[in-house]
Image 1 (spheres, rainbow, N blue to C red):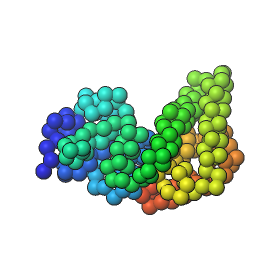
Image 2: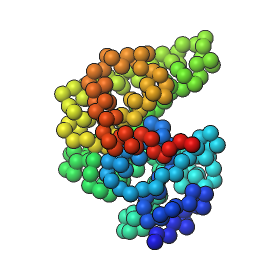
Image 3: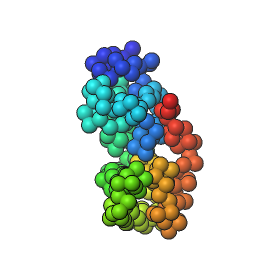
Image 4: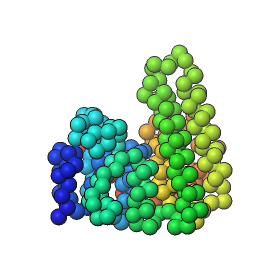
Length: 235
C-alpha cells in the first residue's frame, strides 16, 4: 500500500485507497477538466470535494499541496520512477495524465506541440477572460451598474477568443482534427461554463459560432464527460 503520509492534505482528506490517484476538486470549469480526463483514460481515482463555501481551498492542508490555493490538484501514488507526486494547475495535470498513459495527445513531436499550444490558449486566454466576463456580468453586476466598460471589455475579448476557436473548428470534429485530446478537455468546460455558470450565451452571441456549438455538443455528449462534469459530487 502506498504511503501518502508525506502529503499533509491527506490528514484532512484521508485516502480510502492510497494506491490510486487522489483528486482534490470541485465541479467548476477548471475542476472538471481533470475528472473528465480521468474518466476518459479509465484511471482509478478517488475524488475529494474541496468546498468553496467553507474556503477549503485556502486551508493549510490544501495549500500544502497547492500553494496557490486553487482547485484542482492531485496526488498520484505511482508517479515518475514509481514515487508519489503531487501536482496542481489543471493544464499541467492534463499534460501529466496524457503523458503517463500515452493517450489524449498525439505521440509525434509536432502533434504534441500543436496540442499543447491549444491547451495553453485555453489556460492563458479562454479561462481567464471568460472568468473575468462572468465575474463582472453576473457576480459584480451591482458594482458596475453605472460603468459598462468591464462587461464590454471582457465580452468583446471573449467573443474574439470564440472566433479563434470557431476558425480552428471549421471542418474539424475536434481541435486536433479527428482525435479527441486534452485540448478539447481543457476548453469545452469553459465554453459550457460561460453559459451554465454565468448565463452569457446571448450576450456572447453563441449562435454566431456554429462550429463551436456543434463541437461543444459532441464533447458534452461523451460518456466520460457526462460522468466527469459531476465529480466530485457537491454536498
